[in-house]
Image (cartoon, rainbow, N blue to C red; front, side, top):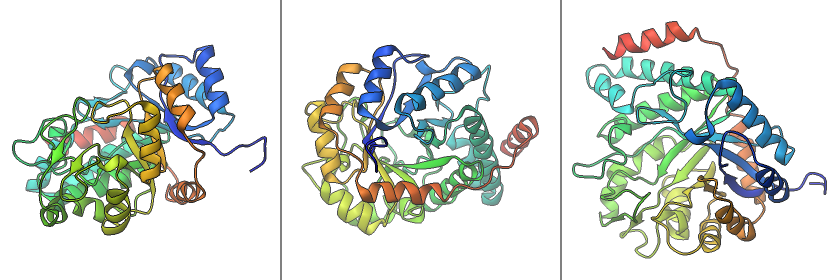
Length: 340
């Protein structure tokens, strides 16, 4: 790349509010992060979100800088009424799938086509969905009704419908939390989960949905220690888990991002979290809360996107399909009919 078009930094950052501050604008221009992520604090009206997305991309001078959001439905959705539809949680589609798997797949693909259309209208081109975690009884509710069932085959089938719906509308899905967060007994936002399940059991239940969707463009790591895989580091910072399991056993060849570096599951300062994640094999690190001091620490440690990461990004872009506009009211009504 030329000096006028430097390689982006291997980081995705949030911002503090509804518009960019001058400090944020200067920081992003200097650091040139790969992309950005929006949260509820960044959302007011459709026009405001579109303008913020434009400001973010303008700050790095790249119209193709990815802009991410968590828009799953249920309790995890940043775009909410009155301007956007309240989408159902994953568990609603899992219940339908227990009666009629084909109907659930159809309803879910339509649901995520509708979500994809809403995102594309705002300029948001990456959705941090689907959750492919398979919860076990007694696990922490951080996954809970976000899951698409309690069996690996159902989660894989419904997860595929999510990805297809988003790709239909030109939005890239992010499968998460690879290689599986469903056994965590604590919330990784607040503490480090440690899973002591055997590798054989992980391969039987936790890995299969990720294997089935290993052809997807993006994935997000789990801040979870798997004692049978690497007792010393969570997946995000484990070269063994990323290299041997995520890239090897699971066979994921797409763009791999860390879960949020500001989550309390990770130890050390932000520079060490950044270095450890990238050295372990993440293609980019994710930082969500918009805290400038934390972002500056990450920026001081982050490296440019590797060549293979840039190739993975480019391959993912080619999976997008030509969007066909939906009638939103009719689509929402059909989803409701199928779920009731």
